[in-house]
Length: 305
Image (tube, rainbow, N blue to C red; front, top):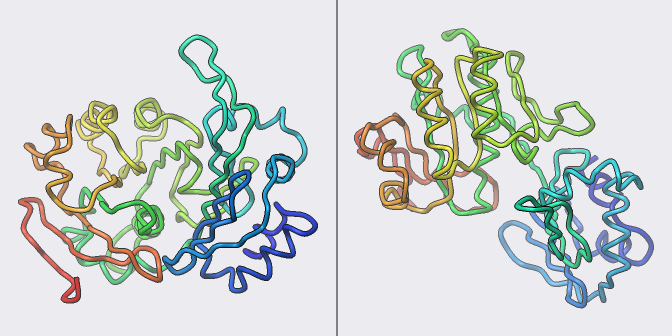
């Protein structure tokens, strides 16, 4: 199924060349396509070049396939710089941004694509369950890593774990603000990935607005968002005051990246997060390098890191 979801974007010589070059699609993480440049694959963390001449016509054909040959219906997604296709795979777009006042209206003359392949790994959070709870209460969790290490993969499975519960802990209502449709992989209104039976998803909404909307409308016990930035801090603080448990991710490599990040002083000083999970690059997404506690002490560390 994964193979066909990706290959449906391509036609003719390009489809044949990519199918032959990739081989095992289960290990495929990313495809980078640029006009006039080789195709670049990322498999198992390694870069592979396919010397196939890419034209603007090829890129247009890929976008048309991604839009189901109805570009008008996807204008809003294109204006945000990406498309989401069946399976929750995301296609990033580069080209000429057309502005209407302060807002990007669309992207024209698209010349570059980044196809990020979604790999849900159900159960990848299970080995860390004892670190995610304080007895039966879920911890406030922040997952930190560089791009491409599986932050969203682990986040997705922790959401499922909190939502479903287990024989020791009751399941909880979880609200997910999925700004870029990566967590749930929503496609034509339906979520692609398993986020648990008690999870509600607000798709395509900026985090700063979505967190407030979900707190008001759905009263979640857990609020999950991806890739928080300084502009989200006030909304996070408001959700905490409403009694939500926060589950989120951010870019970084070390604890210093969090402590020294501009605008995050309020979160670090008040020690909001009770668990900091750091990931490492590897053949599989979501591999944990270290887990820190609320006082920034090491609770677990990979001996090989």
